[in-house]
Length: 286
Image (cartoon, rainbow, N blue to C red; front, side, top):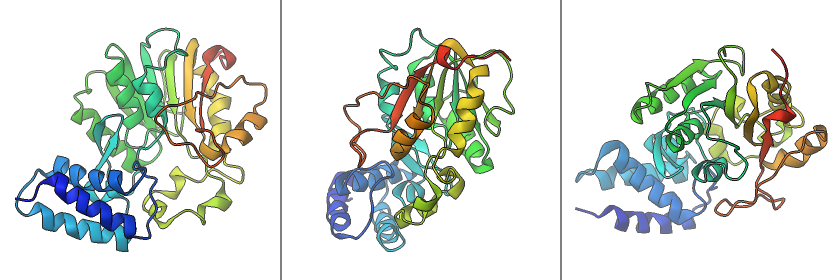
């Protein structure tokens, strides 16, 4: 039987020669090939039929430009495999590095309540809940497909007793006490840039990417409403990608901190597009 690692090495050569774009969790052809082969193995196991099935998926990856996570139904994120249904945003946020480092040194105390805002498949919030096993977790998204996929991942990691998934347009379905840690990765791509993204991004919902003319349509709502839901001693960790400078200028009164990451690739502008913000900068009565 063909060894998965050998197959991944052969696939890497084919992907290296292909006219495709990386950016959905893999930085290069080698990582992409490993995600394809090992993601398939995680989803389906390994059998004599696996190499032929994977060759068919490799052909689709190259010919149809479908991201690997949507071919295999699995994405590697924060050192774990997550289920990713077709049409759901694929987790790839550099916030994972902050999660795995338990948000040091910015988080003042271990959180009791975590909120994953615009959760997609739930990977960010679930990874954080696994790092903080005493915390409860609320995950919200407005997309029904994302809500369903997140529920699958909550069950996959055995978090049903302390995690709840809500269909919500940001804060509208929330209740209860404030949160100690909020992780937010809302849409932030300026509308004019959507048409210039590689074809791979067409497999994801446009509503998970586009955010108005300047990319801040969703972030304005988040920062405008989060003060009622974040503890003053809490922390917001967010991703804004290449729109970081626009965000900093639009909210110049807020003291964003922009962590230097070790393992994440830098964006074209040289930074990582990830910030943290103390809750006392946002806290408002409710």
